[in-house]
Length: 452
Image (cartoon, rainbow, N blue to C red):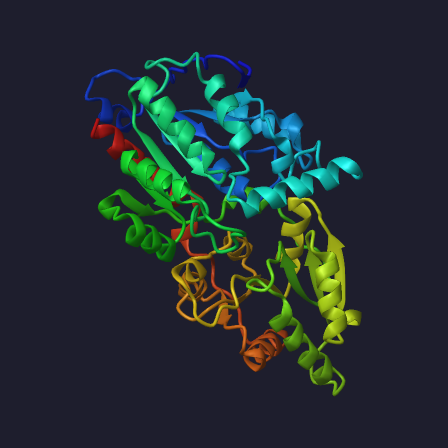
């Protein structure tokens, strides 16, 4: 059976019966509960958000759910990775897709149409800047298309709707379909909506009111960190409706990663910067001190490797701190290549915020790449405010250490210690393995269905 469908999804009755899957229905049948998963980021698109969405779909399918993902046509994306492999994985996992159109692609960074060089790229950049400035959700062009693609679904096709944001327009679509079909919806926050750490411009009062209304109607709300959860609770009084379900690492996807064979101690950062809050300056200052120590012959050869779109920014910072000769810029690479670099690295660097007076939004930032480094058993250097959630993640597993942005000497000493073999990371904590995180989702979603 082909999994990419635009109309009414077919109904799968499993050959074997999972009795747990039947319990929420209060019946003696063998039907698997049916989940409609609204997720704009989904493989074969290559963005970090797809790690969470793929693992949610995969884990729930294995735990007895009939999963149908609503997501845009892959052809709209510029950065696709291994389309055939993704299709094979979908078929093996029994995950179906409803493919949609997407209007206003100029607002979407990964759109193929607006990543090309020339007028289209310039126009797209201007549109995205204006949208951020005026608080316009970049998924506004996906709302109607996603809802329209689900018009043929009936009450028999969906037991529960799960929507993940961003884009947060997915939550609006979930509510509308929920009302039409009479089934509950759950909101999954990968980022904060109206108190985003890297938000630009202003947030409309109407958007805050809409978020409150959507949260009130949801059967449950999940979010990726405790501080972000507390932020939502304080602003919207969610009580027991909110649940922290973190990101994690996937044993299966990381098992095939071969470490890149660096011939020196490699300090690796893969990802994006958002100056001034997420800035590379503290690391560059520490590298400057390392370079001076290296002249004395007390530490081995080392280089800093950057993988991502911000090469010009990193180059300028390296020049300013006098370490340009110790920095290697790789640009945007495939996910597999980035993972290979992290696995072969002496240390992976994760930076969340340099804020001295950290808000809950600052403290709750736990980039998904920290879990990948954990799963690859690579030591982790974190630059984040004191008391951040990410500190508990890495130190609980003895995978690394956190420093604030002013502790340049501490960062340097930590790097020197790693070069001398002072830290051997433990095996990754099973708490953050996706197979265990998936069970939390499974329990929660079945509980929401039981309330109906």
